[in-house]
Image 1 (cartoon, rainbow, N blue to C red):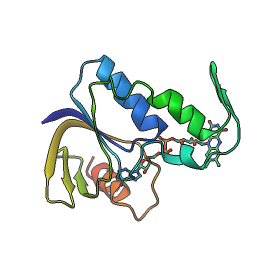
Image 2 (image 1 turned 180 degrees about the vertical axis):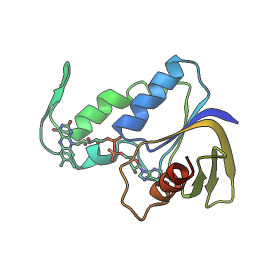
Image 3 (image 1 turned 30 degrees about the vertical axis):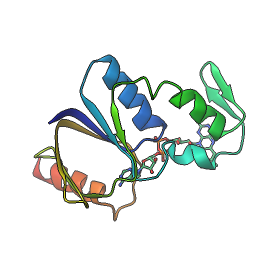
Image 4 (image 1 turned 60 degrees about the horizontal axis):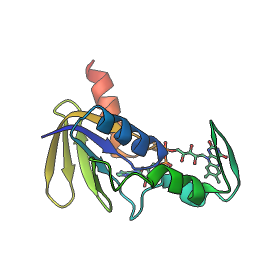
Length: 128
Ligand SMILES: Cc1cc2nc3c(=O)[nH]c(=O)nc-3n(C[C@H](O)[C@H](O)[C@H](O)COP(=O)(O)OP(=O)(O)OC[C@H]3O[C@@H](n4cnc5c(N)ncnc54)[C@H](O)[C@@H]3O)c2cc1C
């Protein structure tokens, strides 16, 4: 049982993970891709709108964001395939067959209508 499971290790997921770490929560980040960083891998323009931080491109910004990942306490799993998310039960099932339980689930990626996270959100709000 984790305190928090965060889906997606883009800027939003990583920043949430560091915050949870500061709060001493047992935190697990699940990332579908091989690497963390999300859309930053596709940003080739200078990034100048982050407060106090300018970067030549997404890769440079990602280096800033990840420099403390190794010393952080949260767990980070990459190349994870999520089968389903049950928000009511706070349970995540992986395609590998593993079931994960958490007090809170944070879903960071923006998703299209066909994705399971959206279906999970819809079914949850329909019941409320
Ligand atoms: C070309 C380009 C230029 C940009 N320029 C700027 C700029 O100048 N300034 C600026 O502020 N922003 C810029 N952005 C936008 C910025 O990159 C995004 O706002 C930011 O990356 C969003 O972060 P995020 O963590 O919300 O989502 P993402 O970066 O999209 O990260 C989501 C993560 O979730 C993972 N994921 C998705 N589905 C699953 C799943 N089912 N299971 C597990 N993991 C999953 C993805 O692999 C990804 O790692 C630009 C974006 C692009 C593409």
